[in-house]
Length: 258
Image 1 (cartoon, one colour):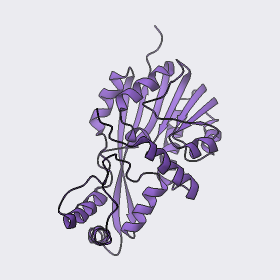
Image 2 (cartoon, rainbow, N blue to C red; image 1 turned 90 degrees about the vertical axis):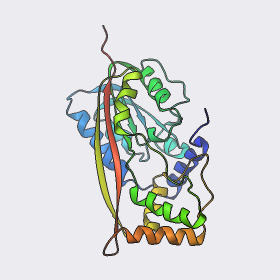
Image 3 (spheres, one colour; image 1 turned 60 degrees about the vertical axis):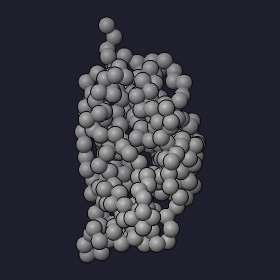
Image 4 (cartoon, rainbow, N blue to C red; image 1 turned 60 degrees about the horizontal axis):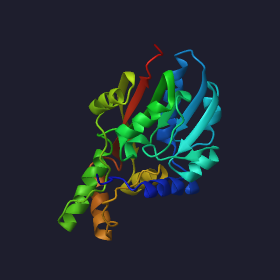
């Protein structure tokens, strides 16, 4: 099967974000939400795995819930800054039954084999362990998609500028197939107001979230970029356009020991 994402480029995009200073507002919102949900369990975990760590302060904050924390990130710079190691979630060798808690923050929407990634995470978890996290859903960035269609109209052909993403309805079955039980998927649609197309693109770069498709098109021409910017602006009012980020909040457990 042909790979959808360029995993080397994925790592480089995250390294670039780390180098110039990452845009953390979405990541921070999701991470804090996960901490709050875990704390409601009133349970302290021994060993946890954090997958996706754009802020090196996160492991210390997770320390109020877990005694020992391992960090993995697709970007080497993010991983190193947090004292962890790089990862490709569908191509790593996990330790067997090592973790009571796994947090996966904002990376599982850009793996080539999500079912395999979930199985590998499941393999790394003890019985009665919690997987919690978030990823982008299928309704993310509708204004950007429309702006890219305006750019493609100048070229006379459609091109894949924005990543396809998983639908919320597909996640629970995937978690069940991977061996998890009691999966819960909550959908949050977060509106963010932007003054310009360029500002949105800058935020996506700061998140390491620009195009990493293997079959991605060349960079937009100046005329295409102007067409995209006009379409984005025309979709708003009073000089601002509201873009939507769909966040899929996920929680599931491994079966308890018999």
